[in-house]
Length: 186
Image (tube, rainbow, N blue to C red):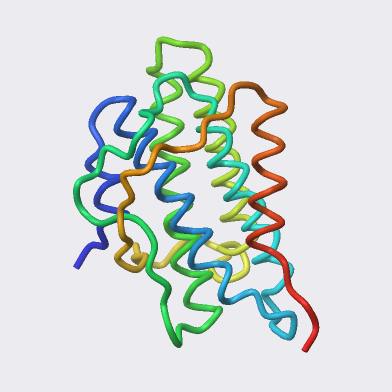
């Protein structure tokens, strides 16, 4: 069964819907990466860097003029943490989703009439490719085995934080990275 996050991204029709779905997917990635960032894991550094790229991708999309101020999805696509999933499984799922995000945003950049949307899509697609490079390349040197799914996520109707400039987006990224990547030794 296809996960709602992937389905939302695959079925997104039009620029605003693709931006909305990709923004939600990056948020979902952050919510599943954070709990598996264990300093003892071989994937720790990859997860920390992937979380930074997910935050960068989300923040790049926050600069897109066509990104809706509120999530468009009426079906659950927000946050619900997996319990007991291995870091390898989370890496597999996030890497697979990153390839779909990159593909959809690359398509959106090519057809977006506004240069701000084009730049936001290209930058966010690059962040998605970086995520795959950090997580997927280790797991599948020849590409993903099959599409996998993220957990069912709960939508929010709260307004999204909007970056009004690249400086504001960078500030958002630093705050997100600090919040999602902080750890302390046991």
